[in-house]
Amino acid sequence: MRTIRTSILVLALSSAWFVAHAQQEVMISQYMFNGLLLNPAYAGSHPYMSGSLLHREQWTGIEGAPTTSILAIDGPLWNNKMGLGFTIAHDRIGISRDMEMAGHYAYRIKTGEYGKLAFGLKAGISLYSARISDLIYWDANDALYQQNISNEVVGKFGFGLYWYDDRSFVGVSVPTLYAADGAITTDATNAIDHYFTQHYYLYAGHVFELNEDFDLKPSVLLKYQKQAPPEVDVNVNALYKDRFWLGIGYRTGDAVVGMVEYQVNPMFRVGYAYDMTTSLLKRYAGGSHEIMLGIDLGKEPIRIKSPRYF
Image 1 (tube, one colour):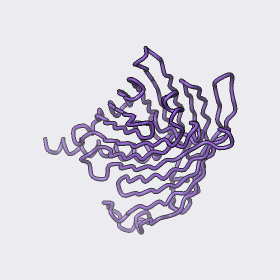
Image 2 (spheres, helix red, strand yellow):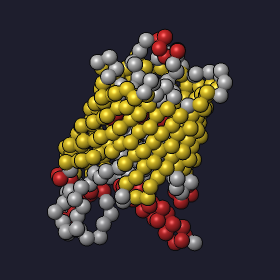
Image 3 (cartoon, one colour):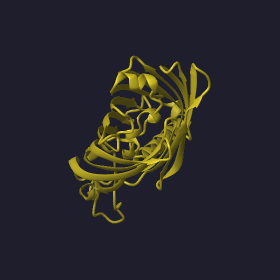
C-alpha cells in the first residue's frame, strides 16, 4: 500500500511539474480585476492611475510549489487616447526563480458611441535563475546538470488587443510573443529551442444590472499553450451596493475558486481568493491562497459615479 501511495504522489508531483513548466506566465484567480497582468492593451483603460499588489501561494504544503508576487501600475495619457503601465513579477517554481520587469503601452480608438479598442505592446526583461544542483539525477556526467543558472537576462516582448465599454470587455493577448532566452537553453542534442514559449489568452466578461443594489458579472478566460492541455476559467461575481464583490469560479482540471473583494473607500480595495484543488494533488496539498491590495488615484466623483467593474 505504501508503494502504491508513493507512486501516486510521484505521478501527481510530476504532473504538477509539467503544468508549472508549460504554464510559465503568472497564473492568478483575480484576473478580472487585474487586466494588466494578462494584456498590455489594458494599460490606461481607466480615467485615473491605478495600482495593485498581489501575492499568491499555490498548492500549500508541497515543497517547491509556485509562489508569485506582483506589482502593477498603469494610467492614461494624452486625453485617455494612450496608456502606460509597469509591472514587476517574481515567480518561484521548484528550483527556478524568475524576476520580470516590463513596460506596457496601449493606444485606443473609439468604436461606436461607448466602446474603445486598444492595441497593446509589452517589452521587458527577466532575470532567470535555476539551482540545477538541487535536482536529484542519476547521470552525474550529463552536461545538462553541470552548472546552475544565475540571473541570466532574458528580453521579452508581448502583444494584445482589448475592447471594452462601460459594462463589457473582450481581450486577446500573447504576453510573451518572443523571448531572447538563448543564454538559458543548451546545445545538447534534442534540447528545446526556447525555454519561454507563447501562451495565448482569450477572455471576456459582462456586467448585468439586476437592481439598484446588485450587479452580476460573469467572465471566462481561455488559456492555450501547445505543450499543455487548454485550460478554461469560468467565473461569476456579484457586486453589492458598488462596494462588495463575492464570486465563485472553476478552473478546468485544477480547482474550484472562491473570491471576495471589498472597496474600502474610493481609493483602496482589497481582495482575496482561495483555490480548492480538484486534481490528484488534493490528497497531498492544501489549496491556493491569493491576496490583493488595489489603489486608484483618480478624481473621487468619477469612481462614485462609475464603480470599477473590471
